[in-house]
Image (cartoon, rainbow, N blue to C red):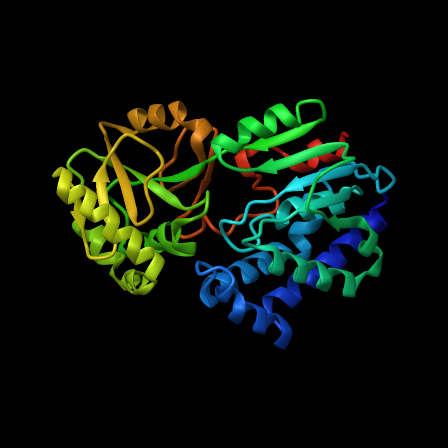
Length: 340
């Protein structure tokens, strides 16, 4: 692909990014109404996702990203996409990669998130109508040349079996972790609240586990995240909080409780909704050993510490604001697509 075409693609998608950053009346109506179709997709959550995508699609980052690859608009392989629907627009990056790599997207959207992604693609085709014939929404995937599928650990085994004969990227469950040193500022701990609570903790980039020094004092943490207390007013989140609290009380499991978040010592990486697990470490090398051991289960690491690990590290409050090159599971989707 010529430099001109890369520039043109950056222009098209940065225009889309601008429209997402400043939603018009039609998009605003969809943002306000999504919770009628999916109770987790509150207006605040959907607006956050839309604007995060808008920030991602800025011209400078698009040019930096596209110039890393040898693109070929004549490839036009049919790439089946099985999209997740846990948070708003979570599957759009895969669609973007297929379109921008010159391939055709066969999109099996999640029933939880079909309306949003269809509307954003309509916005794209209003900017450049040539994208109209570069994607198709399907109920059943067939006649595909490659697959990118996102699901649970259980569904991934089915995907690996069913799609083993074509090039594929199969994603499993992942969660994110924060490494604290005890020296964090109130502002950093407050920002960590975004990493924990944005999208109600449903995303793979949400922090579900803390690594903390031995004898860590949780009081400053609880004080810093107190402004997130209104999350308990969401009925589905509240139901999860009440359920897990009841289980811990009945089983006499030791835990901390601030009225909207349960914090429990546990070696597991994936905590239930409204629960945050933590694990103590002796020194930073011990923390790194835990992260290395669990690397296949970690999406990103939120920390201000300098760590010698391979996982993607982000600053406090930034886990839900990935850049174009922050690929899920650390697998370079564009590299995969440009080599089909």
